[in-house]
Image 1 (cartoon, one colour):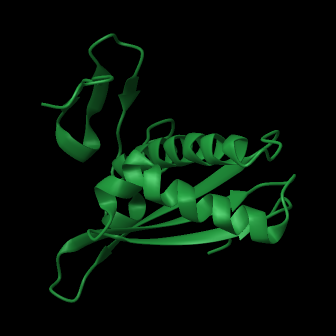
Image 2 (image 1 turned 180 degrees about the horizontal axis):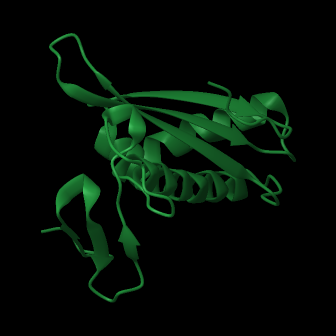
Image 3 (image 1 turned 180 degrees about the vertical axis):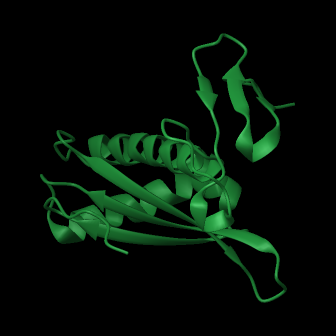
Length: 148
């Protein structure tokens, strides 16, 4: 059996238009259905796709930092801008896709691309979603935000 390194626990109440909280109450947020999905988009509330984007961004960023350090690349100001899309697939089932824009300001483009490829192989989110959702990787070596 594998050794569990960490366990996160959270509960949702009333689905997408409800509330979420972690067992330690550090995460305690209101959820709202986005207007694009027919919801009222309450101010100050989040949605599952935003939370997924934040988690994937942070996890992937840590994988990038780990690989960059191994390659002896300066990891200062590395950023990952995650965009998560919810759409209907060909069978009219709700599906997710992601776009990760990774910026490594202290690497060459070639170094950055290799680091991101390696990070994508080791990041737990990437491993969990591989084969289940499309993930587009964009790699830059200067600040460049995601554009739709």
